[in-house]
Image (cartoon, rainbow, N blue to C red; front, side):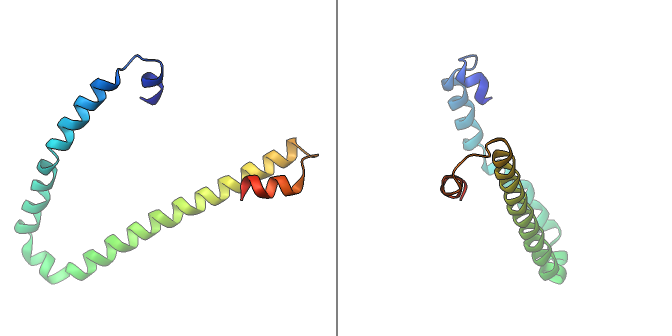
Length: 98
């Protein structure tokens, strides 16, 4: 979409209109959630702690895997840069990539 916006295939006004429409109806996305909580009230009372721990653990794992992916990608980028630019000043590399 960013590419289409940059070459003016999609006009920014169209995106603004659609975004405002979606944001104005955002509350409709929470209605099924609230209905599920009401319908399964006993489940949330009995096993709520397990559900919360599962959600927190899952979120932490996603955040950790994203951070590790970034670190590995950054190290790979530095390795490739050093391979193809052997005469580059090491101080420049430290300032640029860290």
